[in-house]
Length: 260
Image 1: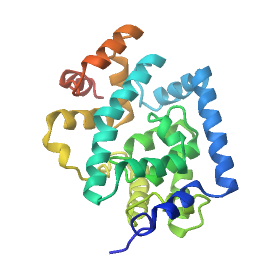
Image 2 (image 1 turned 60 degrees about the horizontal axis):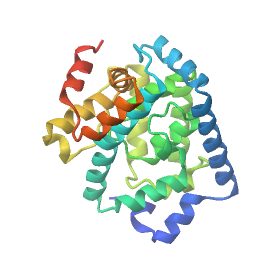
Image 3 (image 1 turned 30 degrees about the vertical axis):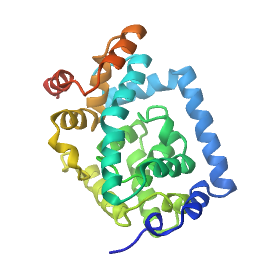
Image 4 (image 1 turned 45 degrees about the vertical axis):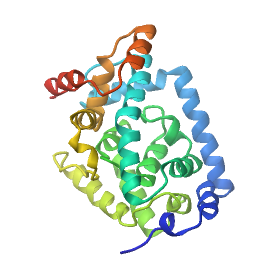
């Protein structure tokens, strides 16, 4: 079995590789500034949601606060627990891995929804993380007319070692075969969205709350529907967040019932 740089290199070497050189650092700063601007203005996010409506991925348009609290729930009920479970299986320190991800691309950490991210940031995020299920991100990339076509070429260049972020992503990715599987999935999904999902294994699927959360947040329509069903008022959202310790199964059932 092939070994990745992430599995074999020393921590300091990984940190240096994740930071990259002047070009990579400059590109990171540009992406962070753009993400902050998008959040402050929100106009472009509305345009993106409108595009996703036209693609059939959005049936209702949640407010900014609903998206913020929906993303917090996605983080605590799916992204973090499933990632911890996966990296524990891989024998990888979760906290150090998140540090490497942040050094490679801060936006991939501060924008879990992808709605505030550039096309290149979304593509880089999918390439730097062995995804639980990348279908959400493929749907996001349809915000751009050529998003999926460009992404296929990006993964091809990653496999060839010619991608500008090949060095920094090489310090992150722990599965040397992931990009080959991802490329095959992108090609199949572009041909037919009925292609079976590229799903990562997890021991958390014995927990019905985890299963319901995964199913709800795995796709962009599921996430948007969930956000739209959250309260609108800030105080109510905060109270609900503090009181909710497990993913609410009734929210999942509502999203399933509303599936197209």
